[in-house]
Image: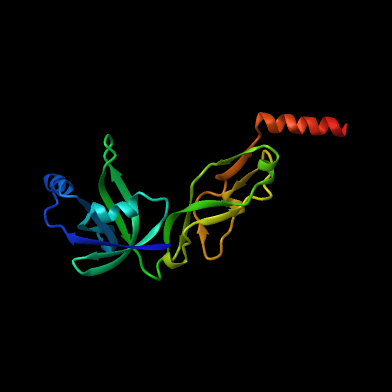
Length: 200
């Protein structure tokens, strides 16, 4: 995974009014969830981070391990959840999850199709059904993307999660989920019929 650094400051006033004021100042309220628990539930550590630094992390197809520097204290984390305004789509809140070398994390990793599929060469259309596959592993073992070779994929065929394996990664997305498939187009059907007629 790529690395990115985000600086922040601890929050003392946690009300809605305070959050609104922070956003006006270009700061986004954030929580960091980690090992600390209370009554069996994770305890959030509240801080703010500048929108200017979060933009590179939020508006990107890449996944990052984040070095959070909050009042000089360093934490290694990954993005957990984002909240956007339902109308303006402005970023309202960010949740981070603290990670360490030993404990595996579950995160969605972007899918990258590699090669030109046989079915596409035969006139079909590639259909990518999911953009990310959830994997579980220590954060240092998680790649920036999952390369899936589609060269042998033929017309009307698909690749499911259960058919894939990546060293050091446990795939958490259900096995029956279709990653990509090749749909027959009118041209590919006509070409197949013409080829069959020629052979007859």
